[in-house]
Length: 574
Image 1: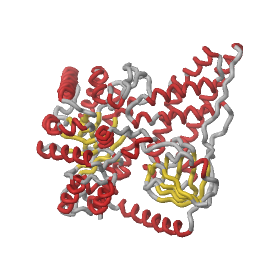
Image 2: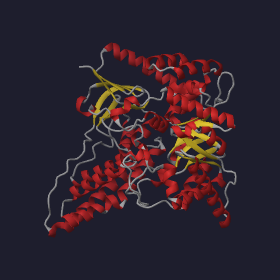
Image 3: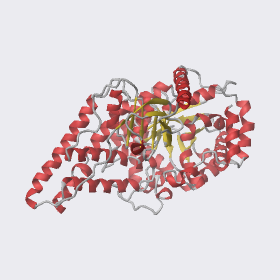
Image 4: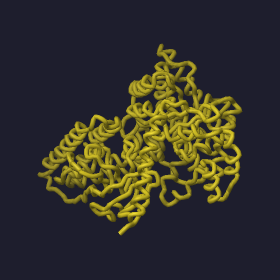
């Protein structure tokens, strides 16, 4: 029987092959009480499971193919770091001692507590890291219960296979690379999961969040995976199969052509230059930045350094990380965003969580409330500026007092470095992110006070339309083409132009080639996106003539009919 499923397309392209089901369902955990005399043995059993899991992850790391993306090793290192964290390696033992429960139950309880803490984090990227914690704990649980790893290390398929799983971890991706799966689909996951990031870096078609793929698809079913549209077609008829074979062939041709654009000058048909920058989270992303031919880094998410640890990174640790990125870019600009964490009552620096953390203490608000934390990061960024073209980006500015206080904190950090005799760029550019409607409406003020602006469209859409983008029940209302959103973007770009200050877009809209001409028509000349999207956007720019864009863009901006909006967008891209 033929049927289709719809999920989130996290990595583009089309794959056709036969389903290979992975038994990666979560382990059911038993609960039982232990006599006190067995506690010592239970603690030893838990330690042995941790050691076995560590050995398993290290074995996987040793099997990483030479041509695998650097992220693969980095994510496995992260899982090993989680495994060594006291929250996983030690806290369950305390539960075993205090409650005399079995090791599996103690670990499962600790996992639930950690997941609950991640749920309280406002930032969706950081919140999604709970998946990594769950994946690591599941491996330990399997070791405790004597289950083998759910994917074999050495499998030789004679035809293209598509992996169907409940969920996948970065460790699974090592095996993925070894057995040459053509694509994967999963019940769980989203665009910010590590698995999705890896899929994009590998250029592997993939669809996630299908919810029940593992239950509906059978082994050896013929699948079509359309990673661009987020569609999986099961047992297609001949006409559909023929159509998708044509699309797949065209996609392969287009992909090969895109690689030739790496060294092409990024400019419209009339010769207007357009700057294409990359967003990164890890130092290991630099290879992808260079492979795409990016002009620099438009967004370095520094919060990655603060993730999943009970202590704060020191100034020296931060400095070394920022310096490494600045030096790796070899003179190209690197825009480091200051800490953009949401409120979390369990954070080491301790704050209570608001009823709605998206509107609470997060990003620059949190940094200003924690001057010691902010001062340390500012010093680290400033010191790194002595080693390259570093720029500083302040997230979620909303009012003028925040900006004044932020600039004062930067001056204080500079003064402290002068007193210590440490080098930094005295003229380091400081920019602000426009992520809330208030900032967009007051963009003229911010443009006057800052060196550049960067529009974070993900949050700008969320706050403008009052849509929690992580909430499935309202996800259909999340609309980048809403005239209110487009109006705020245009207003910000115009404010920057009037003040003579550059404005970039660094949210997901910048990496969507269907929106490239629209953003050009709104006046945008600097895009920052995931490196994997850069050449597609460049291709759109190379095909665009600026003189043809403003009229249609303004019609689209004034339109309130969603169907008409799509028609106008199609005409703009035609």
